[in-house]
Length: 149
Ligand SMILES: Cc1cc2nc3c(=O)[nH]c(=O)nc-3n(C[C@H](O)[C@H](O)[C@H](O)COP(=O)(O)O)c2cc1C
Ligand SMILES: Nc1ncnc2c1ncn2[C@@H]1O[C@H](COP(=O)(O)OP(=O)(O)OP(=O)(O)O)[C@@H](O)[C@H]1O
Image 1 (cartoon, protein in one colour):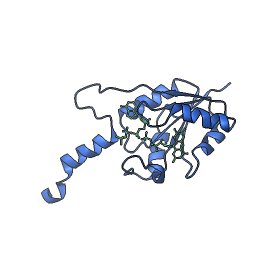
Image 2 (cartoon, protein in one colour):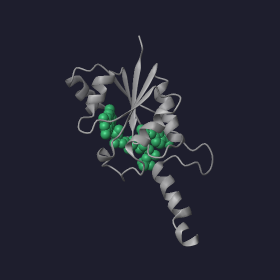
Image 3 (cartoon, protein in one colour):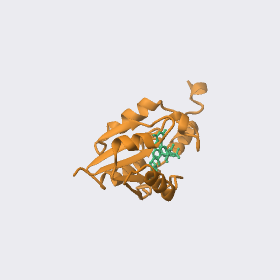
């Protein structure tokens, strides 16, 4: 039987932390399906810089990913009902409550484990493992580019 795994997130400007999370998730099964959050549903932090389809296409191009899907606009359980995963992997720092998700899955009759991935620590000095920190670095390094050129 094919064991299907779901990972999810915003994935705005890919970095090695994303690769670590998706490798961790892929190792738990045979197929890795990734749900990419819709811009309108990213409400807990700054909105992504890149368009929905571009974020989906970049994740889809990664070798450990079977398929990347744009998330549903209103109901996050719709893609899960379609993909029918055996396990959902939350990111190490995601605000979602694993028990709450387990209850919602049970309520919809979806039999699926919920687990959490490990964190990647920087592998060398200066490795940037956060989209927010990459954007801060761009602003520090290039924020005054218009006045220089
Ligand atoms: C199990 C699960 C399914 C999700 N499905 C969707 C979805 O269908 N559509 C969507 O816009 N966001 C969905 N999300 C929300 C985002 O993927 C994500 O939680 C959040 O917006 C961004 O997380 P990040 O801060 O780790 O990038 C889902 C989250 C979870 C935990
Ligand atoms: N350093 C890391 N180690 C392991 N997983 C990570 C790391 N950075 C991000 N992830 C995971 O990748 C997924 C998507 O993350 P997200 O798109 O929020 O990126 P981010 O870089 O953490 O964003 P931001 O810096 O804007 O908060 C989440 O599940 C998150 O836990």
